[in-house]
Image 1 (cartoon, protein in one colour):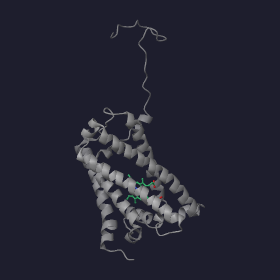
Image 2 (image 1 turned 180 degrees about the vertical axis):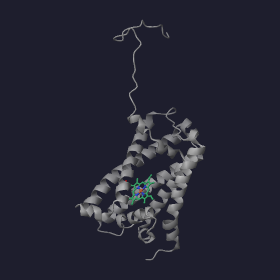
Image 3 (image 1 turned 90 degrees about the horizontal axis):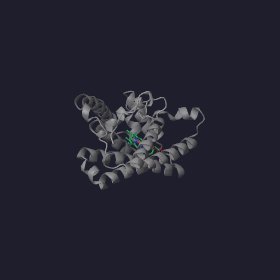
Length: 247
Ligand code: HEM
């Protein structure tokens, strides 16, 4: 089926509008709201649930991101050329992808539940946060749903929902400025809905607390150790007498 004008709008023009908003919005936010560039952490209000939910969500989403990079950027003929059969690829992608997706989903569900039920955390939640959580949770739910759907069609011998021949071809074409609208318009509806929600999240990104992802404290891993020394008399090699401290 030939793509219609809506297809050209959604898969030919929209991705570039979103990229412009993401890049322009991030530069704008950095220039005009550098002090608001924060996670707006709520750890002070509640930390017991956060200790479980936050790593669950963050480790899950990291694996989901790696999965998207592999699934969307590596062309199918390349993996076949190195001997990975379609069946083996999908079995690995599905098991790892679903594990990561379900972990991320569990993490975000716990985070939202905590935010709603812990009074001070809920009071510190803005309309901006609620919108972001809604779009983020929808992206994750729709992602897990299309993965399960493609597992089901794969198991029942179906082929039409193979995203590596539709979504991935379109995704790569966007980056070389020749959007393959026909490839994406041939994808299943579930994939289209999921990609649109993903694009909405990218457009919201610079205006939400998600910007903290751009300033992950990577330098922390490479900075020198902070050296702690005891000032007590008992400290080995102490040369000065201990001073009177707070009692
Ligand atoms: C334009 C952007 C995006 C595209 C084209 C895209 C495409 C896909 C595709 C094709 C799958 C199915 C994988 C399979 O069947 O094995 C998938 C799964 C998934 N997506 Fe996306 N996605 C996008 C953005 C996002 C975003 C922003 C999120 C969340 C923040 C997200 C979360 C997920 C999750 C949780 C899964 C299921 C688990 C997994 O495969 O890792 N996606 N996505």
